[in-house]
Image 1: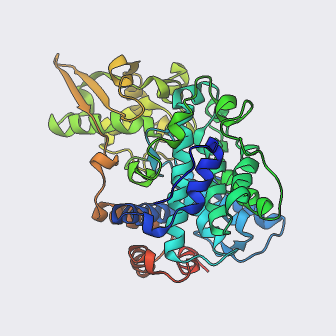
Image 2 (image 1 turned 90 degrees about the vertical axis):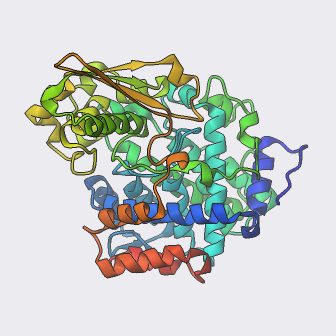
Image 3 (image 1 turned 180 degrees about the vertical axis):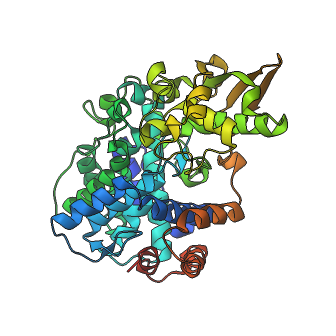
Length: 465
C-alpha cells in the first residue's frame, strides 16, 4: 500500500500517492470495476462518435492537419495523442450515458479512459498499467470534486467534470510517463491553471459541456509533458490561498481530498447511467417507470406529476421553469426534468431514441410536460451527495395519488447493472458503428484487459480503419 507523508501539503500528498500506486495495491473488486467501466467507455464513445458535436471536433482536427498515431474512436482517423484524447472525451460525453460519481457529482471516466488510451502512443502501456493509471485518475478527480462540494461548485457556475478533469488527466498522463516526486506534483500544478468548464451551456443548449472532458484530457496530457521537460507548476495548487479549492468553491472542505486515501478507491464508488440524460434526472425517471409498470398507467390517466429534485440539481434540470418546459435542442432535452418525465410516462423509456431532434415538439410530449412540477425536498438533500435518492408522485384523473421512491437509482454501485446488462448496453450502443464480430472482440479484450501486453490493441479495435 502506498504511504503518504503527513508533513506534505495536500497537492504533494495526492501526487505522492498517485505516482506510487501499483497494480498490486488494487483489489480484485477494483480491477473488475475498471474493466466494467472500460466496456461502458467503449460502447458510449462508439455511439457518441456519431453525434454532430463529436464529428465537429474530428473535422476541426483534420482541418488543421494533425496526423499522428492515435485512434479517434468510431472513425478511421488518427491524430496526435492529445487531440485523440480530446475527440474521444467529447464523444464519450456527448450522449449523456457516461459514468458518474455521486459524491463528487462528476463523470470521471470521460477523462480517465480517453487520456490513458491516448498515452499508449507516447509510452509503453500494458493492461495493468492502464488499469492502475485509470484508478489514480478517478481518485484524483473524485477527491477534488467532493472537497469542492458539488452544490458550491455549481453555484459558482462551474462544471466539475471539466475543472477536476484537468487534474485527473494530468494524474493519468504523469503516471504513464513515469513521472515521480516533484515532477508529478508540477504536472498537477500546471493542470490547475487549465481547469475550466462553464455551466453557461445550459442557457442555449450549446455543445460546450461535451467538450469539457475532452479539453481536460488535452490539458492534462500537456501538463504532464511540460512537467517531464522541467516546466514548473505550483506545488500548492490544490490547497493554496489562490489554489483550486479556494478559487472554485465558497465553502471547500480540504480534508475530503485525502480522506480514506488508499482505503476506498473511487472506481468502486462510481455508477453508470441507464437513461440518456443528466444524472439528476435518473432517479426520478426510475420512479416514474416503476409507477407506470406497477399501476399500468396510461398517459391519459395522468392528471399531474410532482417530482422531488435535489437542490444541487434544481437549477440544472428544473429551472428556469419556462425553459425546462419548452426544450428546443437535444442538449435542452438532456437537462430538462419535465421532458424526461414526459417521455418516461408516454413511452416507458428515456433512451437515445427519445433524446433525439424533434421529440420535444411532439404534441403529446408538450402536453405531458405541462403537467410536470419539480420541487426541492430537504429530506433528499439531507443525504446528498453521498446518496442521490429520488421520489415522484403521479395524480390520476380518478383521484389517486401514486408515489414512487428510490434510494439508489439503477446504475449506482448499490443498484448496479450486472455484467450481462453492461454487455447489453455496450452491444446496443455500438451496433450502429461496428459489426457483431468486432463487438465480441472488444468484449473479450476488455474482459482480459489486465493481460493485454499493449493497450493499443484495444484502441485498434475501437477504430474503424
